[in-house]
Image (tube, rainbow, N blue to C red; front, side):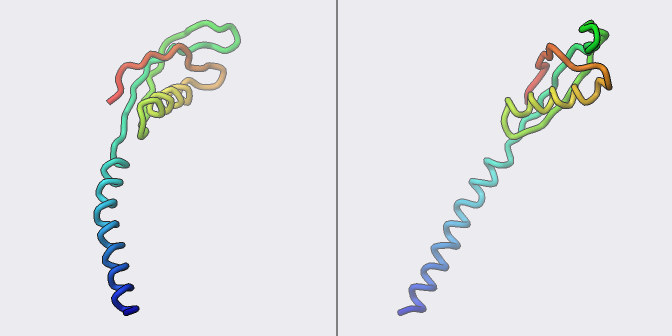
Length: 91
């Protein structure tokens, strides 16, 4: 009797993994890529001196946009910051 219970538990577990595995993998595979264009602003006098582009990737649209803004900020250099970012695309 114990063998039957163990075997059915193993089969039930295998079925659950087989069914839940592809569904969770398909949901986790979705990702978004965002592109933003920001003004490059000098911190000392708050004057815009140009533009900088940023690109970010994440599993949700808001996170992808935040990653793109962070990427743009990393490109401006010391004494500057990216400000007033416009979202160009989210795919």
